[in-house]
Length: 358
Image (cartoon, rainbow, N blue to C red):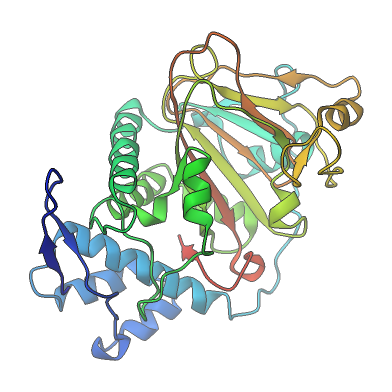
């Protein structure tokens, strides 16, 4: 990895790339077959072994770029024999209209029964507090690196994701927009991203999501977000399908990285399964993809608006139809830390680039 050091008065010394690196796959015999098979960890080990004295952050950046390349290849292979939407005969009970289970009860049938039948599933204690504490620190480091100088490349915390040819991935303004919404892409924070992937693997998430989607899951650069939300943040009702597309094969996992819903903002959720995108951008909506309060009232009927209380490590699963918003109350005093991870199938990914095969 060619880089140089630049020191700015009052700022820490960090590595700054003069130009995006190019990862020449032809220099690594055997890597094509590994990427075609989706064996990203073996491909990463192959490249790392051929790299002079790579740091852990170098290896993280290599892995993320190879996950993007593995996604690109997987997206070119037509999906066959995929059951969609997923089905189950399992029934699941609800608390205030929402299925709410401990992590030990989470499996493919519970996920299908809850999301397809009720629109949402709360899973308590999916991630341990130690992991959440690590990730809170990583969110702070990622935010600090971005806010210090958006043009400065920090090899651990602020490196815009590139493909193997060195091209920066993602829409032109999504990073600034994301930051304005109290979030940053996990894929642009190499140390955070690879830590999160290992945490996902520890709890069996790739297998669970793959069994729900029917294909190898893909994370989205633009919808894999580290969040630190101030207590006075405004919020508006929305369905992610209004901008992702209703036809996508997708599921989201939102994880509370700090306790929230009492002193920090949580989520307000319409406890009802919807199978359509409701009208957006009508009078009273903030953005053109938002849902005005009177539309929410019309859609909810007699169903509840639920504002769960979460502990760090609790997770919420839902798809693009869930009507929800950030749940705020007067008197909240703490920031809310959270991780949002939208998973797609390679065959229905929204856009030609920016995916990372999990």
